[in-house]
Amino acid sequence: MKVWGDIPRVSEIYGKKQNVSKVNKTTGVPSQKDDLSISSQAKDFQTVMNALKKVPDVRTERVKNIEEKVNSGNYQVANKDVADKMIQVMTNKNI
Image 1 (cartoon, one colour):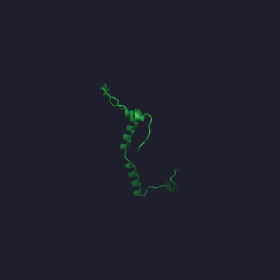
Image 2 (cartoon, rainbow, N blue to C red):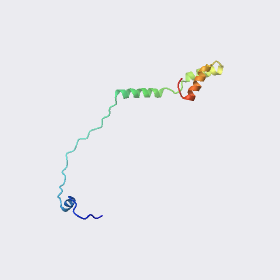
Image 3 (cartoon, rainbow, N blue to C red):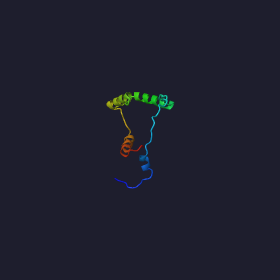
Image 4 (spheres, rainbow, N blue to C red):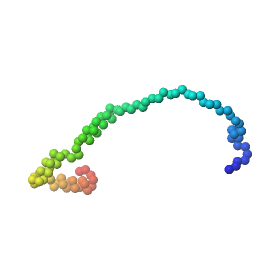
């Protein structure tokens, strides 16, 4: 693309030779180490999370107790409790 005519200040830049001097070394900036601090609340949260990881997902004593009752025929559930649980699961609501 050719541009005809005098473009202000552009022709001045290319028309002049400018002397550029070398930059002297600058003084070094002392480096700093990164600092990390964890709040006491975060430490407490981490402690609780570690304790929860150690708790088993299944309470084996309770499962064994119910299993023994079912096998012996002594486990009974109220009809209303079964119906309430069915409705809760079907509607995804807490009753």
